[in-house]
Amino acid sequence: MTKINKCKTKGVPKVLIFDIETAPLDVYAWSLWDKFTPLSFLKEDWFILSWAARWLGSSKSATMYEDMEGRVDTRDDSALLENIWLLLDEADVVVTQNGIKFDARKLNARFLANGYQKPSPYRHIDTLRIAKKEFGFTSNKLEYMTDRFCTKYKKLKHGNFAGMSLWLECLQENPKAWKEMKKYNKYDTLSLEELYMLVRGWDSKHPNFALYNDAEEAQCNTCGSTKLEENGFAYTNSSKFQRYRCTNCGKPDLRGKINLLTKEKRQTLMMNVL
Image (tube, rainbow, N blue to C red; front, side, top):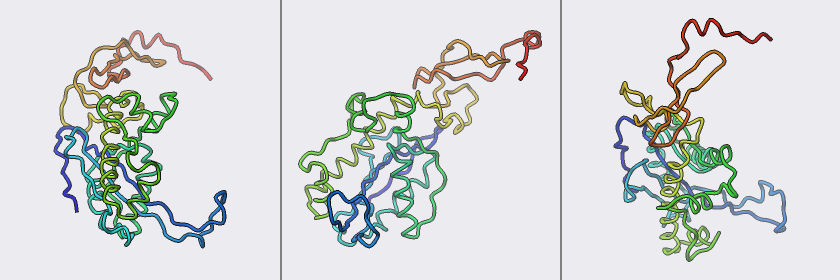
């Protein structure tokens, strides 16, 4: 079992970036074009094949990984789940690509099936959802986005085992396939972290990182930085506030809490009547 690393960051939330790979279903079929597979056609169910995780800002070597090499014939992933459960239980925030719909729910299913309790609550940032809401990319897949925008780490393409063959060869306990899976899975988290750092300033629903420390100076609620510059004003129907931009993550719409309008000016404002 791999040794997991405790999050060492202080004054910011514990942000875990993770990705899982699952074994495919083994099913019977009458045709390649079958649109419905009855439960009676299910030969073997899926299980967690591997996972990779890292704490935001940690070194490349600190990326954690664990897989089912040498025990896929058992299809018993109960021990594999222990460390990823501990990491999720420690995390304040998690970052995934399509993890709200896939990774987190798949892990939850296996946690329940293997007698694990629900991990402690965490906030979930999904780069796929940010991409769909804020951008009009040709593709929202991690491979496309990291290839276009990341400069240090990109999602790896399959090397010696193209497409589905990587998963099938791992199920056959091919050592070379497992070696490639390890690198592939780890790079998913490395490239995802770099992508997240690029798009986080665009996320209008990002968790407020400034809540996780006791500093009394103004901070960016997206990254916790104090490097803020004035960026015009924000207006409501009855208020005016100083607006700021974070020079660290680029968040442009940070707003002070003090209404800059004088009492006299506020009294002159008319209210809309429905």
